[in-house]
Amino acid sequence: MPFLDKENFVHVNDLPFIRADSDIWDYAFQNRLDKNWNVKKNIFFRFVESIYNEVEEMLLYSSFVIVNEDKIEGF
Image (cartoon, rainbow, N blue to C red):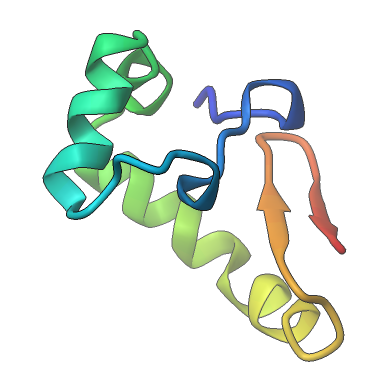
């Protein structure tokens, strides 16, 4: 399951024209970012369930968390 890594990360706060979720989807589509999230819903749900507790715990002492296929990082 490919997910975005730090090098491809764009925060919506850095995009002044984002006003709604649809703007985010449009930006991702126009910049070909949508391919990174092209997974079946049940596979995505299983992935989220498998890391949920670790991410929840990490958020207790991190400002944000980046989830990759092979690691989870808190900053």
